[in-house]
Length: 299
Ligand code: AMP
Image 1 (spheres, protein in one colour):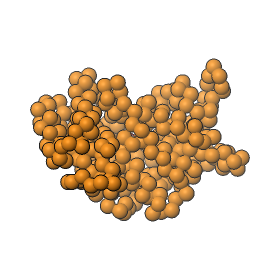
Image 2 (cartoon, rainbow, N blue to C red; image 1 turned 60 degrees about the horizontal axis):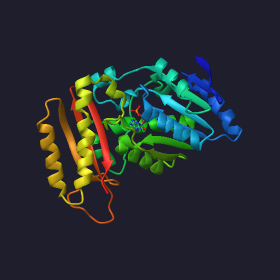
Image 3 (tube, rainbow, N blue to C red; image 1 turned 30 degrees about the horizontal axis):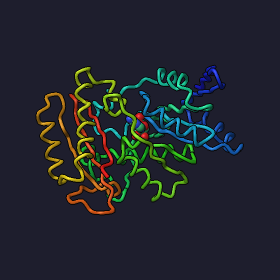
Image 4 (cartoon, protein in one colour; image 1 turned 30 degrees about the vertical axis):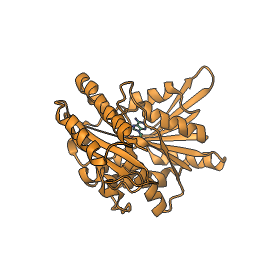
C-alpha cells in the first residue's frame, strides 16, 4: 500500500509518504539517488515522541531526503510479553510526522515482518568486540544479535549515506558503529543527544505505559544520574554505585536492575578512574513490568 499524505505547511509543501513494502520504496529511493539526493535514515520501532523527531530533524538538516523506518523488530525482544505489549501506533505516528513537518521529503517505511525476514524470523550471530556482553547484553540475552540483524538488513535495503541513532541507547549506538566498521557497510552512523521530559525522564515509547505515579517516580532515574555526574570527581566509583543502589532500595515503585559506571568506548565496568578515559553511568530500572534505561556522560 502506498499512501501519499500532502500536508500544507504555512511555509513549504511537505510530503510524508508511507510504504509497507520495500518493492514500492526501493524504486523511489533509486530515482532520488540517481538525482544526486542524499538519504538520511532513522530506524525506529514507532510510538513516536520528540526524541525520534529530533533524530529526523537532524537527518533533514544533513540530507535531502529522510527515510524513517517504523518496525517493532521481534528478534531483539528477549521477553515475549514485552514484545506483545510494545505500543504500536502507526496511524498517529504518521500524523505526528505530518504536523511536525520535520523534513520536506519524508519516506516512512513500515514493513511487516515478512518484508524484512522472508521465511524465518531469526537473528544472525555477531561479534561486536565484546560490547554485546556488557549491561543490556547481560540482562537481555540475544538482544544485540536482533538489533544487529535488523539494522544490517535495513541498511542493505535502504542504502542511506547517514544513519541516526540516539545516545539514549548508548550501547546500541556503539554496537551499530562497530558493526558498520567490521562489516564495512558504506553508512556513516551519527549519535544524537537524549531528549527528556521536563522532569528529566528520558523520552521513551515505553513511557506511554507508565501510570501517573510511576511516571512521577521515574524522574528519580535522571536525578541519580545527574548526582553521579556531580560527585564523580570527588567520590570513588564503588561509593557512587553503592549510593545509587541504596536510593532505589528505599523506593517502592522502582526496582534497580543495574547501575554501572563504564568506559564509554569499551563499555567495560570501571573500578578506578584513569586519565584520558571517558566514563559514562548507565542505568536500567523497572517500574512494574516496564523497563526504562538511561545514561549520562560523567567527564
Ligand atoms: P526506538 O523506537 O526506541 O527503537 O528508538 C529509535 C531511535 O530513537 C533509537 O536510535 C533511539 O536511541 C532513539 N531515541 C529513543 N528515545 C530517544 C530520546 N529520548 N532521545 C533521543 N533519541 C531517542
